[in-house]
Picture 1 (tube, rainbow, N blue to C red):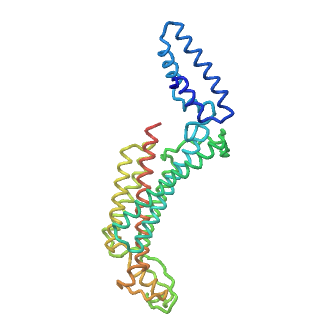
Picture 2 (tube, helix red, strand yellow):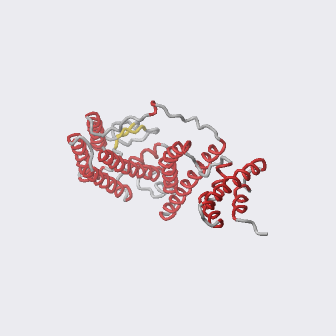
Picture 3 (cartoon, rainbow, N blue to C red):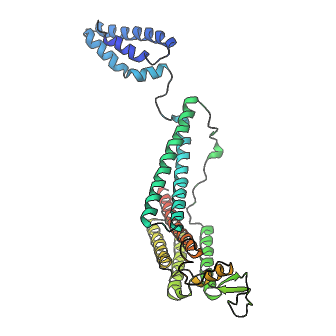
Amino acid sequence: MAATLIERYIAAVTKSLSPTAQEDVRAELEASIGDAVEARADQGEKRSDAERAVLTELGDPAVLAAGFADRPLHLIGPKYFLTWWRLLKLLLWIVPVSVAAAVALGLTISNAPVGEIIGQTIAVGLSVIVHLCFWTTLVFFILERTGADTGVKWSVDSLPEPHESGAGRSDLIASLVFLALAAAALLWDRLVGVVVFSTGDLDVTEGLGGQTAAMPFLNPELWPWWLGGALVLIALEAALAIAVYAGRGWHSGLAVFNTVLAVVFASGALYLLVTGQLLNPDFFAFVVDAGGEGFAAGDAEAAGEGGIFRILAVLTGAVIIGVAAWDIIDGWRKAGRAQRR
């Protein structure tokens, strides 16, 4: 004999429950469903239609069974969701970028092909993102199912401080002081140079007795046009800082101007770096020769894979890109905050 709709529904609800709970739930459902069907039938509704309508109102038997078993049907519930989301966002901001940058830097130093650097960096970055999302979610899923406490409790002390607009007097002073130091460093490098301590009896600079040598870190041939252009960019950055202060905050126009300055700076510096015009080869020739590595200025083999010149050039490029990217992101972030005020 074929089972009725009610019997099939009750069986679907109780099959996932523990044996001790099945009989109680079965009896409860039979009584409640029977009463509902009888109420509809008393109003003149056909019994078969009444049964179908009552069961439809009860909904998916799996959902009903989860309610009887007090079993959550969500991956991460309200108790843990915000903690999970805040932690995951923090990790996604830091870990993939750091790992991808480290991989790209290592491959670049090892003189890997450009295609391999890009491919490996993207692959590793995506892999890290997937692993972060999976394992972080798995940990909170286990916490949710076991009812463990994360130890994170909200209090009024957790309230964040209001975001600064970046347009205060202290921000202006800090920006101008930093830019002044940058300009002074460029001029010092050009006019005085960096003092390098020799470990041997090298007569590099007359009058220094082979003990020290002062020479620029940057290529002297950058003067006057390239270094002059850098000083102009610093002056424009100072004007931007004054405009932010005078306008009492950032807006999209200032963010665009800041982006243009950062892109121009990074493009010019990277062009000079890639073409070998940015750093002073004589400086590194002296440093490595003083260290006994036999590095000679213009020596292609010494400057090749594993050479100090190449390694420092890669590190310098990474710093240039990082500084420019952060400057752009920070400008747009402050402009976005100002628009939401």
